[in-house]
Length: 303
Ligand code: C5P
Image (cartoon, rainbow, N blue to C red):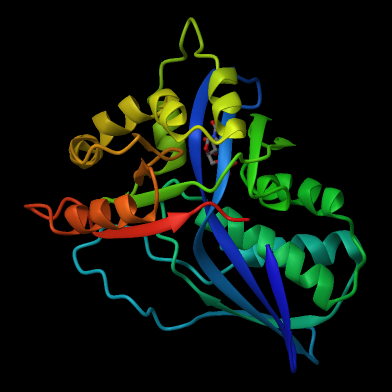
């Protein structure tokens, strides 16, 4: 997470994430699933502008969208109490007793319901930004604990750029990347609800082991990493949303080191051998017949 002071507040950049590996180990008594997953933060960002407000009010507004994406069937983004930014601010006020007001403007670029943790990264950025703006003095560990109350993916963003995550996803072990990763993110026009994907899943009898992938990521071996990409939720998402399977075939046909769906979908990514290959694949994906992809981005792993 990056923050910059402005004359009357703070700007925070909140990165998206992709999962290079995701296995489901079992269903828990609390209704969640135990996971083993490797997360990497990437250079597609939402931006949050925080401005102190003399009142005790909290207000969130959306900056006008730079990109029009006609034909997308994603849920609209709420600026009400169910938005994770509002819930993060409320939680922080509740736990610290801080009574100050703030105005937040969100520049939303990360697609919704896309498996890129757009809501979770905004929640993490809010905890991080308000901790600094309000001079609360909470440690990253404490912020990550509060984040876990808001969503399973939120704590990761306090350990980015890469981590191995277990439990619901909230137990985070930071990882070193052996080298930069270049990816093309390809988003089908429809999103999927994470809860719906988990509901449709059959728990595997023999989980796939992610240690070899962890080792290849640490060595910076892109070819080996590409061969070992794995996501248990992908076949489920392909059943619920046929365009996931279509985009998976399109990416594989482009010949990257590997390709996979991120999280519970619907975004898929191609792991590329460098920026030139990523640029080539992105333009092929954008121009594919029948427009199965509504947005494509060339990104790299964050530092
Ligand atoms: O934690 P988060 O709110 O992001 O999760 C959204 C939904 O995804 C949960 O309500 C649950 O249905 C499902 N989920 C799960 N196991 C996880 C993470 C999420 O079943 N480890």
